[in-house]
Image 1 (spheres, protein in one colour):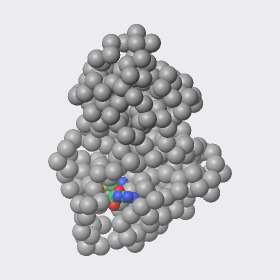
Image 2 (cartoon, rainbow, N blue to C red; image 1 turned 60 degrees about the horizontal axis):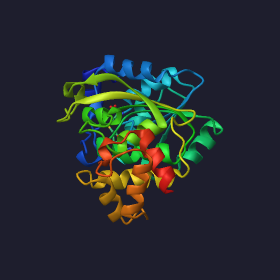
Image 3 (cartoon, rainbow, N blue to C red; image 1 turned 30 degrees about the vertical axis):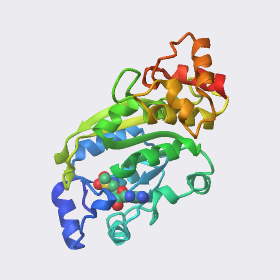
Image 4 (tube, helix red, strand yellow; image 1 turned 180 degrees about the horizontal axis):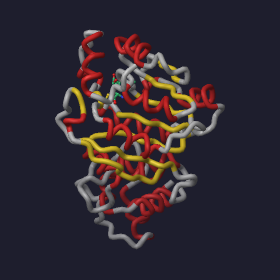
Length: 285
Ligand code: SAM
């Protein structure tokens, strides 16, 4: 099967199967061999690796992954793509296609079954409409994984890297930074896809920390606190958290904890660093 990263080959496959793009599934297929190579290089895929690919589409990146990885498990929701994938990937015996919704797959079980519980690498050109639930799901469920190399909306990649004081800083930034190191590997313009998305894209590699950079007594409480802090981002933290039903703390308790940390009681959540959030959560837990 010819390399699908070349636009004419992708178009030939789409025509052969009379494929109709489904907007609801965030289908924008890559048609740039240089971008594909950059993703695979950044993911540092080797024959030792079991790679989980989310949303293989017609199998463009899957072909590259199959060449480099020991094993590839690709999870695709769109049933119409399955016969196409069987065709475009017929030359590889190390690829398995699962016709499932990635948000419903038990990834811990998958890592256990396909890789004996050893860490997998996740590589994907993500469907943008579910970027946050996918990334949060991978981290929060503690799936054994070493890295996640993904194409996301450019703005989302920036949010993942943002720090206090930036308008992009929020719950996603803190969660990603708690669990991983991040590096933007490439900026990718709309003309590298078919059809063209109406936003810019970026490839980001998230390398999982062996140990989080801050110590947290109760992770669940820590993340509830962070989410509640940014739900009311214009409010002072003490008021926002004091009113948030999901965090059982009073305004006075928050003020007391902030004072113990040497912070003004008027501070907003968007001004706190990751380690200050950890300290606050540990004081309030
Ligand atoms: N990997 C291909 C490429 O780079 O050309 C396609 C990437 S496209 C941006 C996203 C893919 O994810 C589509 O094939 C889409 O059908 C699939 N997808 C969307 N929602 C999904 C879900 N919940 N679970 C699994 N796959 C999904």
